[in-house]
Amino acid sequence: MNTVTLTIDGQKVTVPENTSILDAAKKAGIDIPTLCYFPDQNIKGNCRVCVVEVEGSRTLAASCSTPVNEGMVVKTWSKNVMNARRTIVQLMLADHDEGCNECVKNGVCELQSLAQRLNIQYNPFKNILELKPIDTSTPSLIRNPNKCVKCGRCVDMCQETQQVGILFDAYRGVDSEIVSGLGKYLSDAGCILCGQCSTVCPVAAIYENDQTDKVWQAIFDTSKRVIVQTAPAIRVSIAEEFDMPPGTVALGQLAAALRRLGFDDVFDTDFAADLTIMEEGHELLERLQHGGTLPMITSCSPGWINFIEQYYPDLLPHLSTCKSPQQMFGAVAKTYYAKKIGLKPEDIFVVSIMPCTAKKYESGRPEMNDSGVRDVDVALTTRELARMIRQAGIDFTALPEEPFDEPLGISTGAGAIFGATGGVMEAALRTVYEVITGNTLPVLDFTDVRGLKGIKEASVDLDGIEVNVAVAHGIANAKKLLELIRNGAADYQFIEIMCCPGGCIGGGGQPYRTTNAIRQQRIEAIYEVDKAMPLRKSHENPAVQALYQEFLEQPLSEKSHHLLHTTYSNRQH
Image 1 (cartoon, one colour):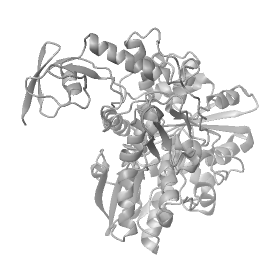
Image 2 (image 1 turned 180 degrees about the horizontal axis):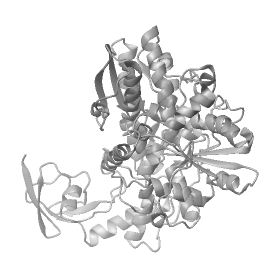
Image 3 (image 1 turned 60 degrees about the horizontal axis):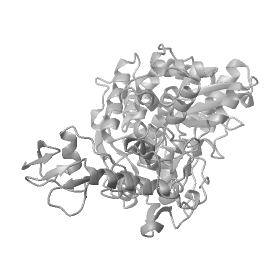
Image 4 (image 1 turned 90 degrees about the vertical axis):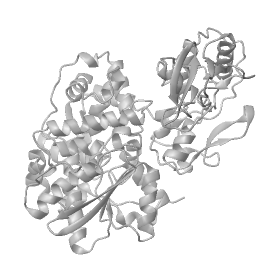
């Protein structure tokens, strides 16, 4: 590989050719401020905050989009650079909603941090913002155009990474703005509510619909028994909200924090993930043995369900009829568990802690009330839980490790790996193999379906039945598999699709500024959780076994179909 040597702020730096000045400066230990730039995205030079002086150039250069040259001399800090950066940010602030104190991103706003870094204590430019309506049309996301800085991160995420394509740059110059659809509300534009746009937004132009007040009201209501379930991915991400390294496993601290917040029962969605495998695995066997629609596609990810219902409704018969673990848990909590503790379903309030903004929409779907009432009352994101913990004054890092409650807090390693792309597939194969063959798996790890590769394939011999499987994460990759199915070219029997890059560990409700490097750290951590579990196969979960013995009878029973399965609808615009 050819290299280039240049001088940055008096330091000699050697980097590969075509490296940007921004990345070359990082190698030299120099941090150039940015706003539109984001790792793993293609945005270059939109905001101009990262400008630098290049010797011999008449104008300042955007360091994120300017490649290095041999012998180049760069100044990242000078009077001209300082004045330019401050003016750029001051102009942004002059066209920005100044209500910082009540803003959901107060304290974690990149524009706010940038203004502080540049020591902007006053703004010579008059605020010219003309307030636009705030889009509250969906239960998952709120879009506030008055906060938008037109960086383009959300557009790149929606158009390139996810390829849903409902966010656009519109107009020019001072009239430029980000719009959804043809200027429609998110609810009318075909948004799948994945929330990936919210994870990269530097300000609060788009964020999750905060429902923490509803949860506090329930906790303070002595007539309600408030149950919480926490998704597999939360245990490897919540610690980041409290400045711990990405991939830190904080399972025990998570359980302890939830108890201190006042939840009556602290349960684990991993239990319901094991239950999902029992139902989904047997559904796959039923289809394989009796000529059902193949390939069967997993249905755990609500953003993915939103996508196929709106954009590929002709392929809905391929979906597993299983509800997601979140919804299975809610149905079981308000029937089986309610009966065990002698309460009516309406006396129980179920809260989900999810890495996902689409879970908010899913919990409110009209068909998700098989307990007789709404099965899951509120779905909170990782970020919302962190706000509650801070609000209550709990020192998360100092908490002792505590276990989940029984019986719905008992789980296996198979349930834990649901949080990573390929995890549902691997968990299913562990169970399906042993159910079909009657033999113990010699090796539990199906490594072919792991990792951040966009589409992964494997072939498994199930006692003479050759099963070809595929795994896709991110909607752009899902579309490739769907086109194969539509064209009759998909030689698979089982497909796992997760809406978000990396799976749930990279969900739209996870800590802000999630990059691929952070996704990889969370994935590695979640497989360490799996390895450390005494039980690693869903069908070995004693609490799931008891649920069938005492209540559901067997997988795919009439009662199981009523509580744990559902149907999906053509919602094409």
